Amino acid sequence: MHQALPPRKFSHAPHYARSTMSSSFRRKRLKIIGLVALGILVLYLGLTSLLSPKAVSIPSGSPEVVIVTVMEPDLGSDYVAQIKENRDEYAARHGYMTFYPNTSDYNVGSAPRTWSLIPALRHAMTLYPHTTYFFSLSPHALFMNPALSLTSHIMAPQRLESLMLKDKPVVPPDSVIHTFSHIKGDKIDLILTQDGEGLCQESFILRQGEWAQFFLDIWFDPLYRSYNFQKAEGHALEHIVQWHPTILTKLSLIPQRTLNSYTVKIESRGGDEVTYKEGDYVVRAVGCELDKSRDCAKEMDPWFQQWKRDRQAESKP
Image 1 (cartoon, rainbow, N blue to C red):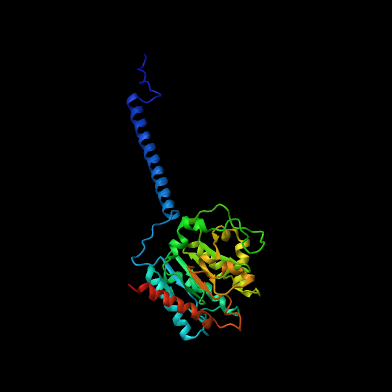
Image 2 (tube, one colour; image 1 turned 90 degrees about the vertical axis):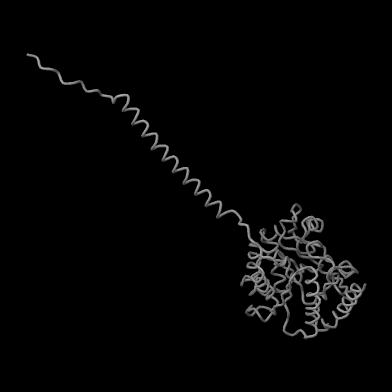
């Protein structure tokens, strides 16, 4: 007697079952792809936020320029008053600020006290974090043409490009390192002049930013301060602008009298070409503090009196 065979088992799921399983698999796969895409998007946005420059809210009233003059302890009170009056009047006219630290405010160890210029600038940048330009001006200098603003006279990009001394030996007369020939004014962070003897670090302009902090750190390196440079921080500056490309790429030399005219004619420094002419921006008694036969206060007093007369004449109706 034959018994009934058991029902045949299908080796494949029915069509409706395949459809259900396939749909479930697709949903899971789409969910995984979505989560991965979301993760990539979050990672991208996070990295963009970290790496992109952030817009900084600049408080109202922040000065565009701060004039930094580092005073020396042995300057007479009358002379200091003249220096401050000249700078304060100029700063008020253009909405700038002034800062008058003293060389004794900073510890430079056994190095010459002129090195205090560098921490003084760092100090000014801390006090005025939203200021764009810092004009380091020798105490033995005066503004003689106060109508000129620093930005329009020098720092406006097109104006600066017209002033740049391109493909020029960085340290005269024949340094093998030259200034760049192709660089835009808005890429410059350090503006210097040079005379016949070298770079003039007593008066220069520095733009606020990370590069400026880097530059001041390099310049103030303990190794340079401990090295017996003949002109202290001056020769250290000449060294780093020649042998550190990162510094040179942000440097512009401009004509001496644009920023730093001299009161007296000194042939070794450039003679008539760098001596003050009527209408020049700033005048400086170059080297007076280094020469015991010269008196800075007496040498600068006629210039101060001329500045006062010009100011009084300007104020008359």
